[in-house]
Length: 172
Image 1 (cartoon, helix red, strand yellow):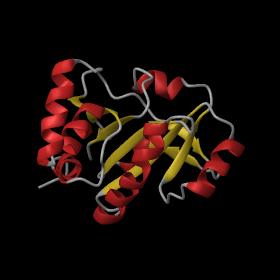
Image 2 (cartoon, one colour):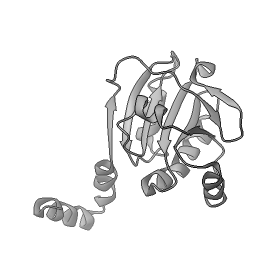
Image 3 (tube, helix red, strand yellow):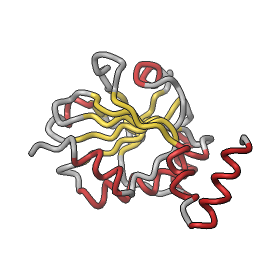
């Protein structure tokens, strides 16, 4: 951390604003610029087939994560909170696990119970098509099925800023 950032954090800590600066520094939000939205068809942890196409008409939050990724684990409760607040008619949250065995994911779920669907990216092809393989990376897909926003890094999905990102994609 450079000297200027330390000084700014010290001042903001005194004024109670350091948390906001750290939250912003932990993630980057940008428009989707990777061209056409890649297909997403994977098996869910429970064995069912899942396809992005099935969810047209709703905003979909596609989160790429791994159990070994601390920021991934840290943001999961806030994703669940946002999904609960907005409801499944407005927002579908799906977690795409990067190349981990099902047993490891099941063990993880004993400490981090989430209700949203978890998909298995067994060969890493989905992460390669959708991300720069930085975890966590989340992509908001509009009701039209097109990727719109990419959030790289840990993000507070329970925040007003996150809810605004989703609401801006909902039909008027």
